[in-house]
Length: 198
Ligand SMILES: Nc1ncnc2c1ncn2[C@@H]1O[C@H](COP(=O)(O)OP(=O)(O)O)[C@@H](O)[C@H]1O
Ligand SMILES: [Mg+2]
Image 1: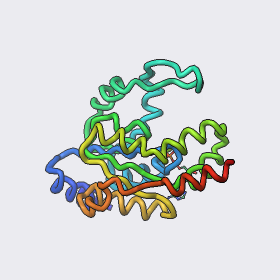
Image 2: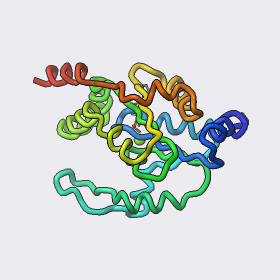
Image 3: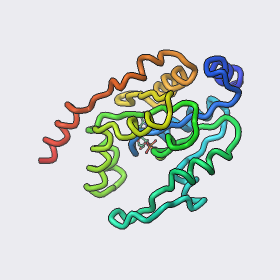
């Protein structure tokens, strides 16, 4: 596939840029890495796993004692990823802190998210925290503070390829109004999850 012809060019036309930087963000488990692999492949561009990148470069601010994990330093992350040139897909729940032209926020029904995170063997607390973050639109709201081109895609019940098609259309400037209006509201689904755990 000639990626530059089929994918990048329409985007350049739309965004008026020669280089395109895309962030794929969302709550852990929503399918960011799966989607990022497909679209970076189709774009023929560099894929950066933001968590791995931060780990390898030690871009941490402090240790989260309660969770036993390190907190990524947003400023250092932005500075170091800024230095990467060319077309790029940044994959990770902190990718919206990087300098990007467009952010895709992947969303997932909290009940489905809970199932996926349980399969990871995470603690009940960690799962609860992340399901709540999804229900409260945390990534979307954070991303909207950082970037003006922020679009949400509901991944629930869709195959990775179907999602890639939607994401690519949005990146290329199609159907944007449909994905930009904070339409996703998980209140109802979240209440069902809460009831289940009582
Ligand atoms: N569209 C999808 N439909 C069903 N399962 C998916 C889909 N995308 C990803 N998954 C599965 O969900 C889990 C989390 O996906 P992953 O891409 O690692 O999410 P993230 O990077 O957001 O944490 C994996 O087991 C993956 O195979
Ligand atoms: Mg991932």
